[in-house]
Image (cartoon, rainbow, N blue to C red):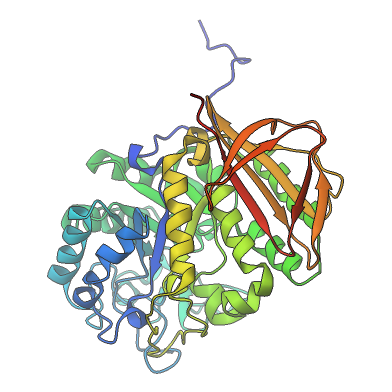
Length: 439
């Protein structure tokens, strides 16, 4: 008897690691992270990163960088010359293993940046397997079309040999270095069926966590736990600069809820290496809206990212092809992230994917200016309200799930909300509350 064609099939057919349910993620740009720029030097920061409330440490590519057609003095980490070697700029394989071991001892998980779409012009595969590369109309190796990525050339995934090699290379780092998964560069430029099989084979070694630098739902079905919420970031940027209002943000959340799988995790961020280097610091990107954007990245649906230096209030665009150190210091933004990440872990309503609660809209009478919602799982509830304008806003809350007794998540002050309740928020202000515990 054939299967019932009308029976729904699971739209996510992979199992997220249990530890990812309330996880947050931190990106390390090894070159700029410490004066030494090495794995060993970066180890000293791991307890501090752990104490922020971080769970996943993402290392940018650890592989050697090509010399041919290199950009800048040191080149792009995304121009890989050997998938099975370590960039001596950062140390050696033993140093990487030690970094991973120290991270694991602290309860952290480590994922490596993986560049499957393209290689450096002088990657070892160019001589060994030239048939594995895309050719242009002249028959020559070629960069990814339409981009200015002149330091790399594209691989051709119609070759079974390439697929096997790349899969085995990724398995090498899980087995030999003990890493817990990968962040995959321009993942949408590589066929989905390749990623599906990679995930299957990696999970046979041990459960891994996979992040795709892409924004499509098909990658979530069998390959990736987490994808970029590029459009969330872009929408928030437009709002901060007066080019959009909260209605545009509601479009994102509607898309997230209805077009994406319930168990899809989306990475929300105000900065990363691309944004910082090419478009501006978080301060340039968000201005007075920065704090509200950070808070929403944690309290709203999504897994929040910290790009190294954010917790120190770093206000510089880090060089991408040369050495440019972060200036480390204690900063109020570090405390903001610590508070928010502790809140996320303490409240299942804020957990990731299907573990957490959906954002349920609380209507208000200034919908284009103020976003208000409740997230809930069983008896755990979190209320959020955000004024995304440069003027104070007083709104009346409509018929939503906000009625009840609450506690301000930042001050501990009790607050009671009801339908028809007025709520005042300062310019670019936010209010986050948790449900008061019943006696």
